Image 1 (cartoon, helix red, strand yellow):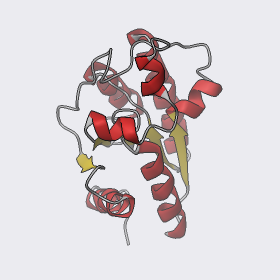
Image 2: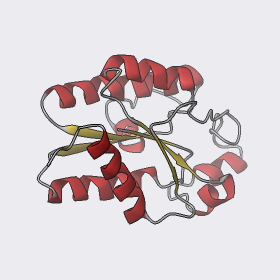
Image 3: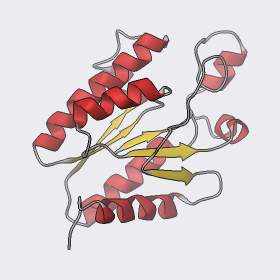
Length: 172
């Protein structure tokens, strides 16, 4: 499950709540968070277009390994370009990757930014920030769109659980 959206849209919060819900349902789940990945396996990457694409590729490769070992993987990454998301789909598997667009207006994202990305971008300390100085391409055909500015985290999680039931990932 790829949760894609602007920084501050609620991707990580939704991912963690989904992880808890899946655990409570007896499912094994792993969360890959873009910020956490940049502290480890992607610490050599910057924020250019190619580096963002590479970060998603690495997450996709790891997600595939986790899926192959029976885990549900939830990746919370900005993943700002359609081409990078399509490459992720090819890596993980056409029928195994579900793109969930966590949509929220930029003002909402700025108000909910816990990492200071937008503040640092405004101060000229960061470049290539999707939605500000780098384009964010909304997914062309997401499996699900969540409007995190008007929908509770719990309702977002239930929508994703519904998708997983509909697609046969979870069966009773």
